[in-house]
Length: 240
Image (cartoon, rainbow, N blue to C red):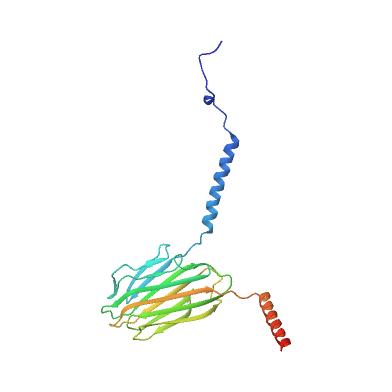
């Protein structure tokens, strides 16, 4: 005798598969852990700040994490007129062993200010170098018809300054080693460009700081190099 109730196999309520549930939980945990690890491997960049100062007036701009701090087009500060301009640094430019801070004023003009214009860019949070050794390059390009001064700092220490006298229309560079300037810890770099209060100030100005890691040869490497040179000299003497 059969019942009128017909049950298909798919309609049978099955007990939860504990093995599958555990596998799903494990997979979800692995994905979440990978996400946390990936996020921790991304460099924690600092902030790039660009400041314009003339007399008692100050304007400040930041990069918002992009690496570009941009001056709005047609900006006026204390009768200085700028058609845009920017500062840029990491993550837009540079890597773990090459660090930059660049100020670019594409067009700047003094329209009657009795005070000079000081432009400062500071980037924080540079990744520490493996050693305290580095090379600090500076470039100042001044086509603003008046002289300009550029100063480069690591943390709060002045590394070097460049000066282009009036009538400008030229560029100058410098390069020097730096040691024990805080490079083995997270550090900052600051560039400052100063234009004097001259009614003839009109044109473009760009300054660049470039700091790169300089590896120091290990004692073993130096010894091998010395041995090789000594061997080469010995062979040469025998041939003579």
